[in-house]
Image (cartoon, rainbow, N blue to C red; front, side, top):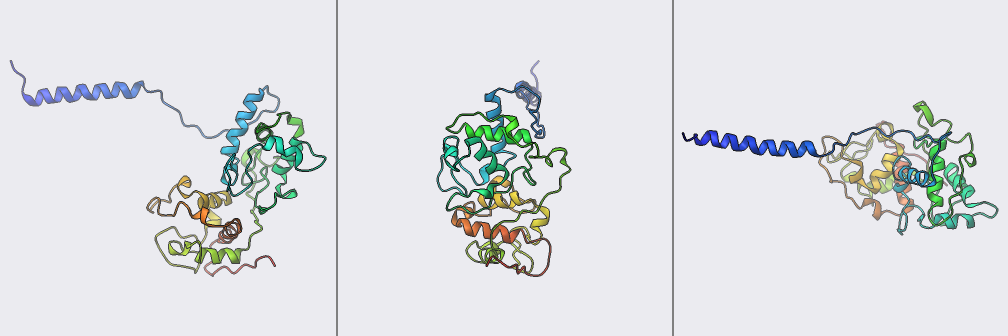
Length: 279
């Protein structure tokens, strides 16, 4: 007896679905887990593991790549290629590891000529690396052309004390920029006002209202959003990739810091911000 064409089609469709289902189920599934806080104190770790952990923190939690590049000129902060070898020559009397640790815990102590003092202390919020994470990042930086000899005991016991447990309050990030000049960048060269509203400035609905951006987003998000808009995602309800992807490249370092400084004043006031800049 011949089967009706409808039955034949149904059997064929079921067979195809079965094949695809089997193939899909044969693919290893990756379980998504939240990032865990690294703790190496009291444990055994090889130098390779330590360096790898440091590299992951450098690219992830530490948000170092927001400003730093390795082997790439024109970044927002100094190129770190060969830093492990160059660090020993930075400050007389300091070893490479001592200089790197100081640069992480108190970046403003030594500034590379031509770069503004915009790096926050990485053991404080919002980055808040703990002591183990500082150890790993230092080892990674030493590995960039130098000898890795940093030990956990080289990291001050007070470093990252407020990072663990999630109870630390987010500190206000103060940049050495001029918010008033940043407002001029917002309405002028940056052309941000064409899409965004900031207090009483602007009225365009193309992009999200930034009138209280400093209350609802972290400083590192604001900094990264200017440099790489696509990487930070799109606010729900707005079309993706409308914000120019090269906006950060069109600004000078000073204009960038000024603009971020201005955005950090936007905490919900309806009045146009009129902060005082540096004299």
